[in-house]
Image (tube, rainbow, N blue to C red; front, top):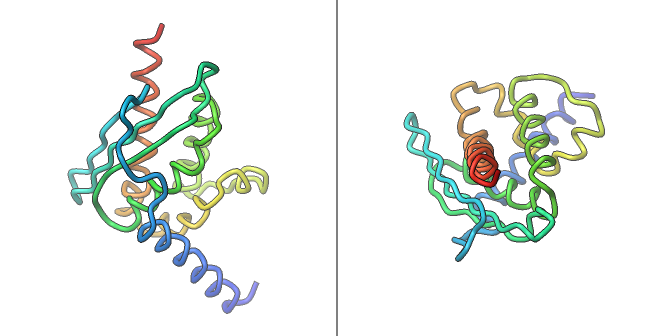
Length: 154
């Protein structure tokens, strides 16, 4: 791949991040979420509140988020809300683990990258270690929410 191709790919990724930041998907509070959690990054002040509603089979059928922070944290939250729709909690945890691996610089298989959807646009963040927490905030918040839900639902 030539440098121009890498530059074009970076431009596309930046466009995806800015689109999710400027036009966040599923932004707003849910009235009766089955899972809800707040995440806060004390280093930069990023904040996110996630809510999920599950159907009777444990599949996410509605998701919402509110928050404030940098474009990376808010875009990651928006992307998260798109990706978790229609998935069960185990699938969400697996997706979150793959995203953490991507942020740590691990190479993923093509099929794993395909499952990332727009999250793939955030892989350049791993070159800026201080920003990785911004990208992971919503996902860490969701993992905490799932753990809490599972511990109280047993």
